[in-house]
Length: 139
Image (cartoon, rainbow, N blue to C red; front, side, top):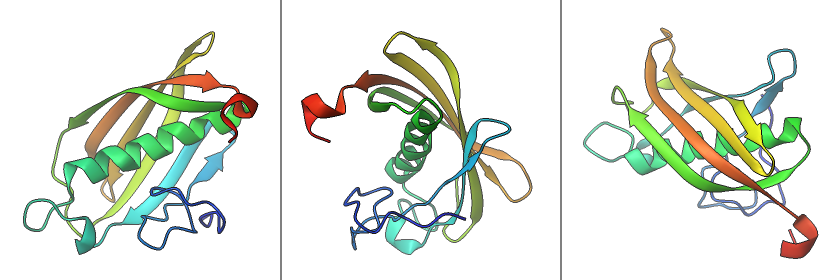
């Protein structure tokens, strides 16, 4: 599994953010998918024993955003829709996968799914990302 970037301050995937999630993802080149495996701790709790819905959305957003690596573009989230299908328990091992559904010019549609170890679909996201010029935004 990949390691978080040690100089990136991003809350979701940055290794330089001690208070962040420090999520890391791998690229599945053959299937053109981003893949991550996690066990989220009690610091990400919402209701008693369960992961907060905003954290689930963050995990999906991070994974879907990383799909841009296959196109070698930078993009920002413009819309994010999440379906919470089953609660995710604190400490439960989950796998997130994300992929490109479609592209229309600067608009990218990505899909992400979170499954448990048994393969059950726990949450699903769909996001619209807009390609940006990194020089213009000094990224």
